[in-house]
Structure formats: structure tokens, C-alpha cells
Length: 86
Image (tube, rainbow, N blue to C red; front, side, top):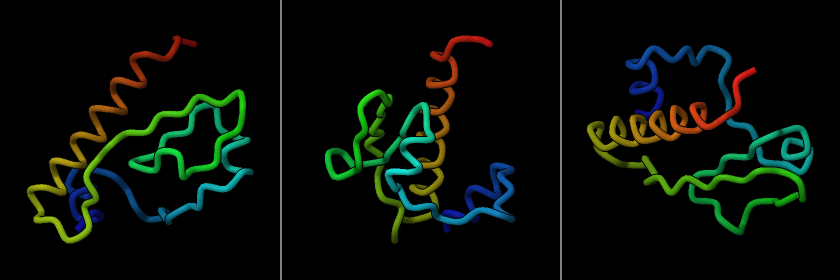
């Protein structure tokens, strides 16, 4: 259902796949965004961490999954607006 609501929003999922949150991934990132992971995720000094508390879409009705998608989109828009222009 998540793939369906992302496709509805125009997201191309052709090459998309889940990526594990490893120390190597965190080291390569400027900002690490997790969704409900909190203290359980790896933390490296010098990185900016954001934990967005979003509802797990597993088993939720499609209307709820769409709402979660829109909530994440709003978080992304807010984050992008807060970053310095290059």
C-alpha cells in the first residue's frame, strides 16, 4: 500500500529498495533522518539527527497511509526550507 500511495504522488520506485542504517551510511550523511527510531539508531558525533515520529503504515487503511505520506512530505519541505542556499 505504501508503494501505491507513493506512486499516486508521482514517486518513481523503479530502483527503490530498503537500505539498512549502518555506521557507514551514517558516516556518509550530513543529516540522518529516522522515523520513530529514537535512541535505538546508531549515533556518530558530528552528524545532525532528526527523528520524525510518524505512524507505522503497516496494516493501516489507505487514507491513513496517504496521511502519513503527506506528513513526511511536510517534514521534508520544512527541512529543505531550513537548509542554507547554495
